[in-house]
Length: 183
Image (cartoon, rainbow, N blue to C red; front, side, top):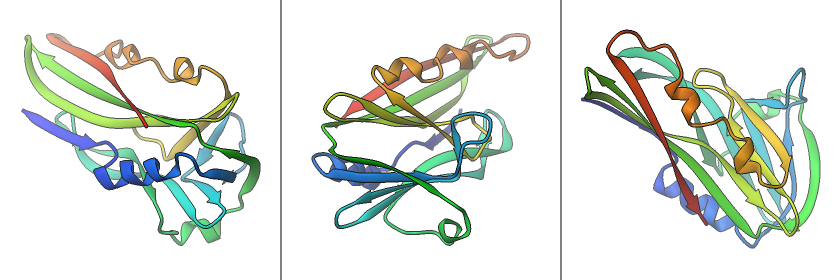
């Protein structure tokens, strides 16, 4: 069976955990063009440090073939691309009350035998006093991050069953379940 894990690492979860209780001064990203998606990077500015959410593709054996698959990562390191793009910053100036990480476990079955499993981080939600901001990987092959503001944003994430509804071919079925990590 082919297994792939492109979810946040333990150290990335620790970085997210360190954000809880901190005042997020602002977050920055590229200008939206036609949808509320930002290209490649979101910058989180705190009083004493900056964190970066990146979305890049990498070659992965994704459901039986080598594919360019996008994955989210959270880092303290500023990649050179950050200085090459124009970003717009949005003030927040509030402490983060809670962080919700949204993972998916995607499985393929051929004639009812599990052949592939992929675990990935779909995105995360920052909860403040009376609102939330979410950051979701746009699609499996795009280096874009969807940004939403409001409340009950988990409900606005791409439904897990959208993976199951794809056309997979004869004898192949798909299952997808969510794993929610609350920090």
